Length: 442
Ligand SMILES: Cc1ncc(COP(=O)(O)O)c(C=O)c1O
Image (cartoon, protein in one colour):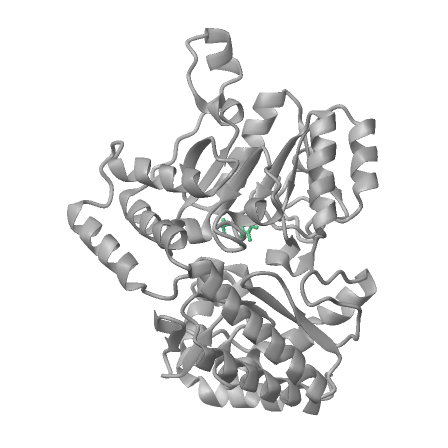
């Protein structure tokens, strides 16, 4: 049965429905990224500018998906457009080293505390894959600890602990240890009992871009135990880098990991990734002249589009703006306004839930009254299961789009969202919450 929310969505999006019918014959599920699946069909977008984007049916949306978190400067920021346009005329791939890669690497080193050395990739998935290989080569140990639900891309090792594991060999998964977050004694016990652990990786503000939060005490506990056990600590800063603060989660917490991985904002809206960290670890890629090392321990790394000039020019521009202008402060201020407005809206409408999150990442949790300081919201597995109800999430996402907002229940706020955008978003959320409630789902 089609719900009232779905019917309105179908009526508003005939062009997207038509395109999806074609796309289903072309791509699995009709999409090119698993999280773009949406029932009855996803929207097809035409263009974006600043905080907004438009779909093929002419609907304008206030965007909080924001290039899957890569666009803190907004769509088509004029400085990024100018830099990329200029570079386009000078060549997109010169099969050679460039000044641009030096500037991009230096921009990372200027901002990210752990970055003694850097290596570029084309995505966050590649960056964590390389981080794993580097720590294994460096320590001579095989296993890596990650945490339940923490996402580090889609390569075989990173998927450990996931529910969907088709095509991944058991042998690969056996090299990964998946632990619940926020239990430092369990981490220490695991390190004490297994001498074959090379590294610990985490999303430093919590799983799903910070949605399932970790405490600051847990993160500092990880720094402490990894130092004591001689294990490498990796912050996956693909989302948090240049967002949670100019220097990422490591600067926000004042905790320097041994390595970090980056992507998203790093590439200024174009594909890009990097691993950075202690020189002795990143230098496992370097030729030493010692044949035993170079042939058997060294890490090889190729990649046609590593540090390509277009991504580099966008990335240099984006990181320059992050460094020299109040990009993070502005996005954070808009996120605080959104968070306060959503919490007020929930209490006015007597809807159980909260809006919480740090910096410019805000999460709307519906369905359960719970203890929460609106920053780091730690939920029980039972509460999480109620909040993550997939049917309600889908209805909420469709309802938000019906009211002009692309977000669902996660808001990656950008420096170009205005107070007006935020106030319209809160109004849209109020309507959407009531639509969902009218369907008996809240
Ligand atoms: C924390 C984290 N790590 C890694 C990745 C993978 O990055 P990419 O999609 O660029 O491969 C993502 C993607 O969302 C992510 O959120």
